[in-house]
Image (cartoon, rainbow, N blue to C red; front, side, top):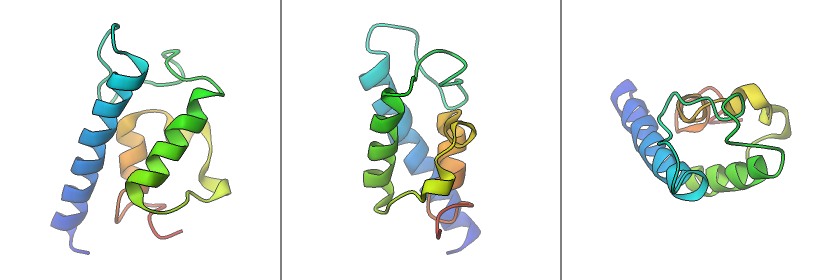
Length: 93
């Protein structure tokens, strides 16, 4: 995958993820942005992270390896897209 394709894949995942996060976890609250801290900001807890992992797996079309399921990998939508979008650090694992 070329650098341009990787950038587009990340941008698409990020856009869809931010929209889903706002719809699911902040319908009446402050908007969630790409760099909004999901755990530190109190938006996610141990139950909601399961929903986020499941959504991410569906969006990327593959399972996220157990070793990649860490709160720092799901700290923000930008971090998730960076790691798990096609071409990301954990994309092929």
